[in-house]
Image 1: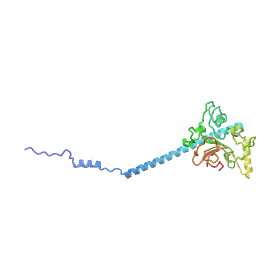
Image 2 (image 1 turned 120 degrees about the vertical axis):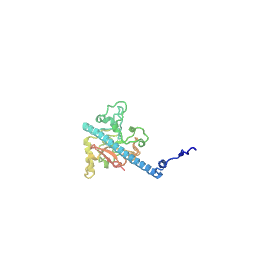
Image 3 (image 1 turned 45 degrees about the vertical axis):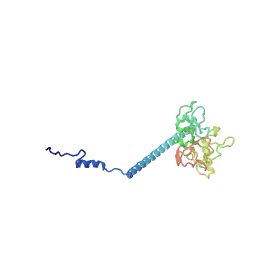
Image 4 (image 1 turned 60 degrees about the vertical axis):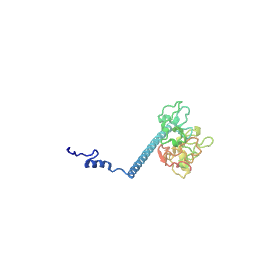
Length: 269
């Protein structure tokens, strides 16, 4: 009689092996709620990181904007020292066009004092006049930064005299019309001399009961946008649709410092 052999079935496992096998399938995993919590945390951190990056970028843009305006202020100061009068430009809107075709733009007149290359028949647009932070959705449909006028020189028509400390009637042309410190429109009049600036401050003081005014209070150039009341419907050039800095604008004063102020401070309401 053949002895009966004991054997395990093909799919039979030892108790220890069966326990190990079951443990592989019974390991605890993430529940749907836990996964949703993780996703929310990741999204929140991403938004916080993005907000920090945006603030850093805005700060960098503003630092560059202030640096550019200081360079322009230094160039105007050098021109004034060399010529005993302010430069005259063809209009109050700052133009970065540098070419021999238009010798009265800010870029052309200040070219030697900004260290720019010589003007040629080909139009150049020096970056120092660029407004950092100007984005396509804020350019009124224009595609190039130099097609948007983002800065304005001092103008008696657009900067309220009582706030700017340079009253009307200090310098006039032959027709009796006020001429701003940087000449008349189309540069029909030269820029003010140093003595005329001093006379403007003295007249302001006399007209305001002896209130002291200094060049540190008079804006030479400032950032502009279409939200300002005096800009709406009166400027022939495309300007930014809203302020570049949010709650403030940068202003270059005649003592060549730059300050960030309320967007409406220098405009007549």
